[in-house]
Every structure is written in C-alpha cells, then in structure tokens.
Image 1 (tube, rainbow, N blue to C red):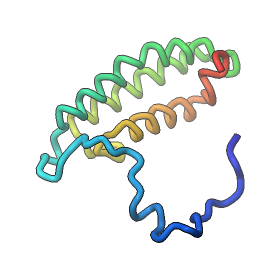
Image 2 (tube, rainbow, N blue to C red):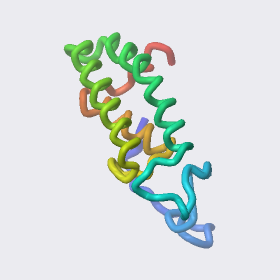
Image 3 (cartoon, rainbow, N blue to C red):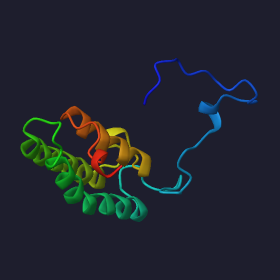
Length: 124
C-alpha cells in the first residue's frame, strides 16, 4: 500500500540521500565507455529481461481484473520488447543508461499504462 504522506529526509543523515545514495551498485559501465554504445554487461541484463517478457505476458493475459487482458498483454510484450531492443542500440534512450532498476521501472510503467496493477496478485 502506498502512502500519501510526503517524503522527508531522515534528519540524522549528514548529507541528503539524493546526493550520495546509489541504489544500483553493479558497474554496468565505466567512465571510459562510449555512452552511445551498450556495454556487454548492459546487453546481458537487457537480454535477461527480454527472456522474461513471455512469462510477464502470460501472467498479464490471465489477470481477471483487466478488461481485454490478452490483447493488452500482447501490447505490453511488444512495447517492452521494442523498448529493450532500442536500449541495446541507444543506451541513452528511455532514461538510460540501463541498469536493473531502470529496466524494472520501464516494465512496470508499461504494465500500469495498460491497466495492469499487480499481475502477481494471484501468487502472493
């Protein structure tokens, strides 16, 4: 359940979290990497997310809370696949460079835009 309360900084931190915190610490790229070319690690992660698209599509197809779920699930699969392929060609697209958090956020954004709020509700 999401809170409607505004976020406030934890008062005991010496510096604001936004200035020092990195949620993703895996080095997908280094300063010397070409920003317009996906790194091997980025491509591996993108490929991993591409392999997961069919299982997410299947879960979305079976979501009884979404009208016309099969057609919307197919639309999700196509849009997300296209987005991942675009990130391989242009890692700066879609808010990149890509990391695991961005890839998850993009997937969830597309699902929500299509009306899917929790495709894993049945298994929780």
